[in-house]
Length: 246
Image (cartoon, rainbow, N blue to C red):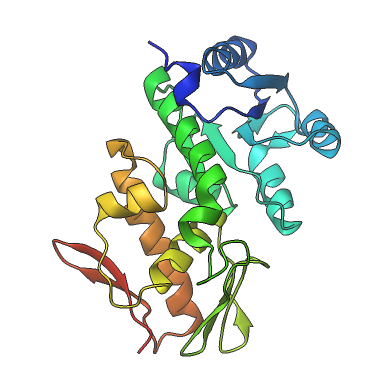
């Protein structure tokens, strides 16, 4: 079962996977969704393609012939390149998943995975990429210039993808940053998981419920590590999450 191309955000996708059968299967299902794909089997060749072509998404395996795919993701983020990354791996421990997300991956799938879930996650990432500006980055009277927020020592600059607390930088992934900026625009407003899925992740796919919780927890931990005396993200039990600056 495949989703008709017209209902999917179409894109140019780089597949970095050294299992030829799996790479071929992935490419086939992406093509059925209307995407254009390029397949490579190593980090070195992937970096060459990234230097020559503008992609909308990377499907990135961790266990590659010339290293761990996580290093490519870290390299991109170090260069302030926020190209979406969907990481694939046979490693299914919680520690491995967190390592991939902390490296800057936008999402993480463990092998084996269902085609429907794979397609749903690709759609979600591409939709979120295309709607990121209209969802979160706007200032009143000008939808093209993102507004920098300054709230009780916390500064969020969406143009530079920069967050600092009391003049100390806080390193966030693209999804963590988008979530923080979204919540911080309306301090005190409580959002349910379903609302965050729709507004931040741009999906209603129920498989992302756990992703919302884990992303909120990682974001909260990073902010509290920078300033233990000022919790910004609060859980409203049975309802959802809110941002508080006071």
